[in-house]
Image 1 (tube, rainbow, N blue to C red):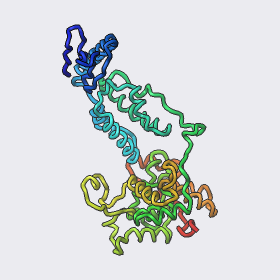
Image 2 (image 1 turned 90 degrees about the vertical axis):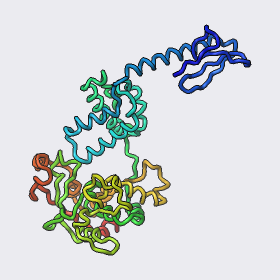
Image 3 (image 1 turned 135 degrees about the vertical axis):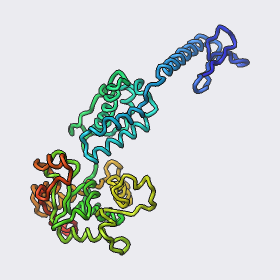
Image 4 (image 1 turned 180 degrees about the vertical axis):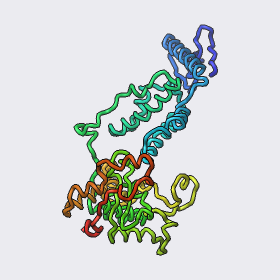
Length: 389
C-alpha cells in the first residue's frame, strides 16, 4: 500500500491540504475514498489519519505473522483426509456433513483459521433459521476447530464458545410450520409430476418409506414375494430398520410401471433402480459417484417434488417455509392407513420405528451380512385408490 505524501512535513501520512478548496483531505489507502475536513477541523483530520496509520501497520504486521499459516479451506481438506474415515456415519449423514463442509470451505476458505473468532462465526451463522440447524452447523465448525487445535494450527476452539440453542417446542421458533400434506394436495402435485416422481410418490404413500429408501430400492430387492429394504437413518440404532414388505398386486404394478419408459419395457439390469430417470444430458459431473447413470439422488427427488408442488397455485401462494416436502407423504400415508383401521403398531413397523436385534450384524458386515430372516416382515395392504378415495 502506497503512503500518500503530505504536502507539509508536519502532516501524518494519508493527509494533505485540499488545495484551492481549503481544508484537508484524508484518503483511505485501501479503497482510495477521500474524506474532506474543513480548515477548522485540522485536529480531527490528523486524528483520522493517525488511526489509519495505526491500522495499516497492524494489518502489515498481521500479514507477516500469517505468512505460512493455514486457511480454513486447508483445514477442511485436512479434516476430510484425516478424520472423515473414522466418523461413524451412514451414507446419508456423511453426505449431509460433507455438504456443510463444502459450504464452509466455499464461504470461509480464504480466511486464516487463527484469525477467525467466535464473534465472526456467530455472525456468519445468521442464515440458520431454526435451533436445530444452528446446532448442527455449530457442531461441524467445532469438529474443524478441534482438528485444527490438535494440529497446533490455532490456539482455541472458537466455535465451542458459540452458545447452542434450545430445541424445545415451547419456543415458537422451533415449532413446525410446514403444512401437512392432504389428499387434495397430493393429487394436485401428482398431476404436475414427471413419471419417475409419480412412481416415487406412489411407493412412498403405500409403503411409508422416506426419500432415501425410495431412491435406493432396486429391482433386485424384490425376491420371494417380498421387497427387502433398509432404513439408512436408523440402521445403526434399530433392528426395525430392516424390513421386508409383502408384495401386493399394487406394489407389483408400480414396479412394472417403473420398467416402462416411452412405451418400451426395459430389463431390470438396464434400469436397476425402481425410481430412475435418464439425464437430459450425460455430463460427467452429473453421473460421477452415482451407483448407476439413471439413479435419482434423494436431493434431486426433493427438488423435483418442490418444482411440481410450486406449479400448484395453492402451494405457490403459500409462504415457502409452510409448503409441504416429499417427506410429508409418509405422514399422509400413515394418517390415511390409520383412518382405514390399521393398527398403530403395524404402521410403526412399516415406518421402521424402533427395536434392536440385527443391528450388530449389519454394522459388522453391511447389508450383505444380513440373512432374510433378520428382516422384520411387514405388509402394505392398501392400494393407492383405497387410500386416496
